[in-house]
Image (cartoon, rainbow, N blue to C red; front, side, top):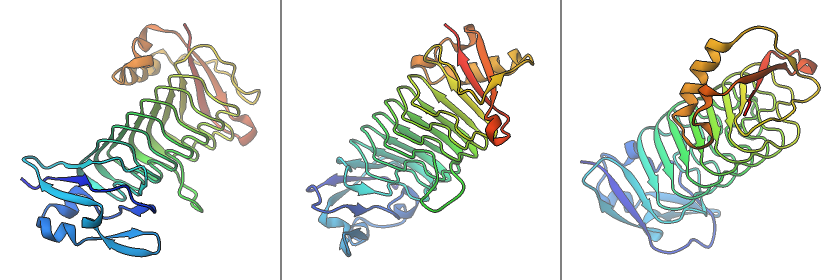
Length: 270
């Protein structure tokens, strides 16, 4: 087996950069080699052993037995394997990942799953702003895979998202699914102001009850019962507010017409 547990030694005084610390990258290394890996800390490079004690595991997982609230870029460009964090994580968690699975037992900060292309990122707490959105200066958001937030998410959730599924069990902030190009965004709680702003295509599903769409969305005239049953049953696997969706009627609106959009604003009626 090639798994490792990284036990936290002390809380860093500055933020640390965890890029490159992925299951596949560590699989062929020894404990001594892992301890010597450089981590960005402020404007310096510091050996990993300054912050973590390395212990082998009987499986292939990479486990952080620590709270990584000051650890950024967890699973950056990860392409396989499984990471488990027994606490929270910082900015850019799961950003640019293309495969594998990351489970964070706590909350994460901003820009989680930015430009994610594949795999699964599951956050058991809350997510900050710009989750499943774009990296700063980029034009494309999440491009594939699945993001699941068991708690709440901040503003600009799934901004410019192009593909994949972004799911929040709780409330989201303003501009959720703004400029959405494609993909499925599902929200179990309340949605903030300006939801679906500039939406081009894709589906925004609201399972938290009746809510009026923006005035630039119009009622859909076509019948989409078959599509709704397939989508509802898929989302029902997430549990929580998405259970029993297939038994609820879907009220659909199309837009954002102000952006010549053809997206769907879907409300699961009580």
